[in-house]
Image (tube, protein in one colour):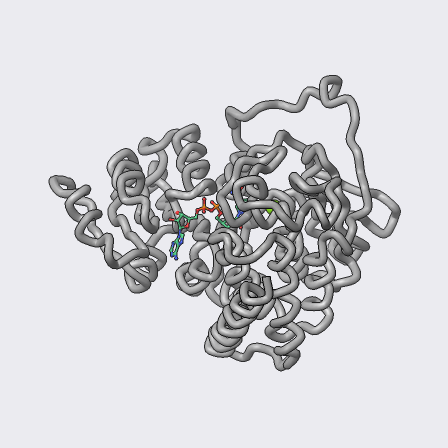
Amino acid sequence: MTSGANAKRRLTILGSTGSIGTNTLDVIDQLGGRDRFEIAALTGNGNIDLLAAQAKAVGAELAVTADEGQYENLKSALSGTNIEVAAGRSGLIEAADRDAGWVMAAIVGTAGLAPTLAAARRGADIALANKECLVSAGDLFVSAVAKGGGRLIPVDSEHSAIFQALEDDQRHAVERIVLTASGGPFRTWTREQMAGVTAEIARAHPNWSMGLKISIGSASMFNKALEMIEAKHLFDARPEQIEVVVHPQSIIHSMVGYSDGSVLAQLGCPDMRTAIGYALTYPTRTKLNVDRLDFARIARLDFEAPDEVRFPALRLARTAMRRGGLQGAIMNAAEEIAFHAFVAGRIGFLDMADIAETVMERMTDITPALSMDDVYAADDEARIRAAQAVSATEKAA
Ligand code: NAD
Ligand code: MG
């Protein structure tokens, strides 16, 4: 390890093999790669070849697969190197606990919760892509970061935009937070048309190239539902301050409205590397090789009100925010089960929101989460109930 003025920054990427993870490695490479950074740990799941190739390319200290069954494969893929190997939940925690000052949290779903929390507790700066941390355990997660003493820097493009448009000393003057939504591939479709779509069709996002879950979540607007709750926790906003506007071009990434009528927005080409780079070099800006906006070519920016009848996920997010307590954890867990059932062809596209709503209506307890055990218990119960609702939907079809 180097030290002093030339010390390299030590980084860890949780979920390095995914869409955000590979983009993060690209940004690190653009900013000087191994000359400027040391990679403490990389983690993946089933994609062992990619994980091993990444670990070798950046000279990671530790490579972890979440899948214990893949431990031997990863070990043999990295034989002849001095890269350490670990697997499973404990391996993910080991990766999070390594002393890296900056951790990219880019594991998809609730699986990202425990490792991200571990990194937060030891005081690392958290570049947060995984929105489920805030949706399921918002208050606990935010206070864990505060106690740990690290910074929480959003990577989700909307929240990065808001973070950039928020004037630190003018927080009291924030009136509204406006999340933009592309509307996804079914923006203009009727419910009847959406009823029959497959995961293959639903995953084709018009503007962004992303992982499977978030792509499907963009089509159902469930992703925006998660982002509303994410924004509430990140920016300590009241539910009624959070608005969604459909903006099909995905050029304005989100906006903050102030009490004098001003609205500040952040714009850019739809490329996650801008938000990732900002999170890596915050509070300074760096030079990135991403496309620049050509306004004359874009010509126009359109806006529409979101339709909560065709996209009920937005309504569910409002219910979850209004109720508070563990409702975010319940909504998120139920949707995760419904998402997997949809991808497996067991239920239809519109059934996903119905299942999330059914579970939320059966678990209306709004006691606040006092510990992560409360979150995991609500998450488990919501998953069981959602699995039952999936079976019932399947039988009825
Ligand atoms: P992805 O599916 O492309 O990658 C997910 C990563 O998590 C991979 O490295 C995978 O190996 C790992 N993973 C999967 N299951 C795991 C498990 N059970 N345990 C541990 N690791 C596991 O997903 P993505 O699109 O990169 O998204 C990652 C997170 O970032 C999500 O929470 C998503 O909502 C958020 N996000 C993504 C984008 C985007 O543009 N892709 C934008 C904003 C926010
Ligand atoms: Mg987003």
